[in-house]
Length: 484
Ligand code: SAH
Ligand code: SF4
Ligand code: F3S
Image: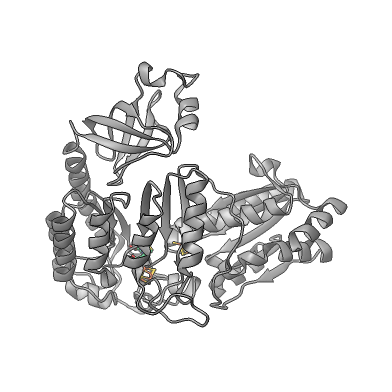
């Protein structure tokens, strides 16, 4: 076992004893960091409370937009200063950014102190790469582009007690014209359902209340044949989701659904199983058919609206969230007006809005008709104002209702309150009346948050804000119990 060898190597050399990881990017990157941490802990390392107290610092990067690159390089500067102060600090860079040759070269050239550079495909080899660095004293740069099947059985040091992230597939073959992911994550590969279901059952047995099934495009799970696949060709994501629901885990989330491959069967499965979230994150990107075609999205406005209508017919209380890119090259005022009208028509409960950011190597980055920054900014602000109104209206509709929320911990900016999330993905800050807190041994919200993380509560919503609601708990459900 490489972990055992490492353990010995680290204790016999001046190897690292503690690690610190900073993650940029999506939930897949978050989960990759949990696996990096799991592998390091299997090698005997412990988490450090801060960069300053760590022996090994890892930056798990993202390159989805220019500001993600910027945040990464900003942090690399901070790590550089720490390395100058403590030359014994080991520094590793991984994630999506090193998969882009220009960035890999920039890191080598401008940050020569980085000890390890590796990509998403190389995560299972972290112990081996680290050992090589320790034994040789030389930098190790290992960024594979293998597209191999996902490695099973890796340990994960999970960061949240209430939600476990479960990868069901990786990579993306959609090649939306603006997007870097197919280049950084490689070809689409699905995990076998046996492995996924075994992991979910294990998580349920370990007391997790929620699993989040992850993939860049969950609806194309098992759609690409792969050598050695155990699942027959007819199985799709709707089938998998129903199997996961049947494990009885109290709540299931999934992301991301591409409208292109979303089936009515998936909506039927959601309608049948109350432990599947009453929420669809369905990235729209643009409301203009012309722009959607340029983006290579393979659906149009009419199809998107049809999915929304069908979902609401089958699951009346379903909530919708989305991603939208403002200012795709050549987007006209008329195109943008189409986005505004579609957003209004769907009345999204929440949305992530982005300004178009050219990504080196993608087809869209070669287009000449870039929008002037002030036009982009102005459109972004108009869309944001619209969505803010819709989000607030959505939250206002909840006032007076009783929601079953999964407790995530103490509320961030509301002292004394706890934070929970409904099946519709709405954030609810709430007070726990003393009679419900009795027997918990504390009335401090921080400690209550830790104690109750992963439990369900019934909360009456009393007040709505733009991005959240607040209310009072009426009941605390027994551990391991939850309904939607
Ligand atoms: N696989 C998901 C999206 C993953 S990336 C899907 O297809 O829906 C998350 C979001 O980032 C995308 O939905 C898109 O809105 C945004 N995004 C991706 N590339 C971008 C770019 N070059 N500029 C601006 N936003 C981008
Ligand atoms: Fe990117 Fe499109 Fe794949 Fe999503 S579906 S990851 S936007 S290429
Ligand atoms: Fe970023 Fe890679 Fe995820 S580019 S969004 S971390 S797949």
